[in-house]
Amino acid sequence: MSDKEEREIGRIQELESTNLAREEIRDLVIETKKKVERDNDILAERINKEFVKNNIKSFDIVGSIGAGKTALLEKICEQISSKHRTLVICGDITTRVDADRIEKHNVETVQINTGRECALNAYHINQIIKNKDLFNYDVIFVENVGNLICPSEFILGTDKRITVVSITEGEWVIEKHPMLFKMSDIAIINKIDLLERLGTDIDKMISNAKNYNPKIEVITTSAKTGENINKLIEIMGL
Ligand SMILES: Nc1nc2c(ncn2[C@@H]2O[C@H](COP(=O)(O)OP(=O)(O)OP(=O)(O)O)[C@@H](O)[C@H]2O)c(=O)[nH]1
Ligand SMILES: [Mg+2]
Image (cartoon, rainbow, N blue to C red; front, side, top):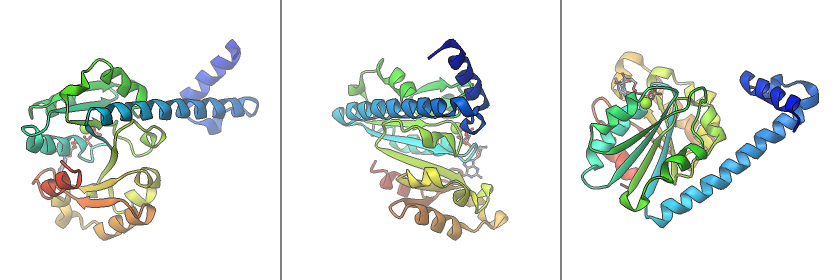
């Protein structure tokens, strides 16, 4: 690739949309993006083999900003930390707020700051686990960057993907973001303690998730009151 082309690609990536690429390099941009995704998938497969070899159950938790991913992880870790040796990898643009919150529940945490990137990828996970003795863990959680779009481009090598939304985002949130629900094993509709005030149509949200992915397990929770957290832990097989 020439310097000029590399500069062009850098510029396009800045714009974060292949649709805005100039006609003459559009194919190259798309091909590069596909290659990155292919390489990511190969690495994710290798990561999963490592997890399986070490008898680790692994979960990637994705979802909208503020839906309650960290709050749910706090509740889950509170319950399981005495039983399972747990590592939580948190992804955020900046700060280690989430890792600090979760660490209080007696589990090990690692915070990854992605800078401008709106999702974790398998390379981030590999960087962490290559420095860890996986023999020391029974469960690994990854909390992805809060975003309902970008994480669909990168799998991370976990056994299961869990997508979290909350009723404060409106009953259309699942309908508007099909991709993550299509590729998830569990969908969590959180903040049900607020239902009386908001009147969100939860049945519609459940049926939208099921329509996109008939195999998906849908569970409603409150990380605030703890409602259905034990049921969630059971569904996760922990
Ligand atoms: N009422 C209510 N509030 C909740 C619930 N879960 C989380 N919250 C609140 O929602 C806010 C966001 O929760 P977080 O756990 O930080 O959400 P998150 O998905 O981890 O957010 P990001 O990591 O920033 O994407 C906090 O103020 C939580 O206390 C819930 O079930 N009910
Ligand atoms: Mg969080």
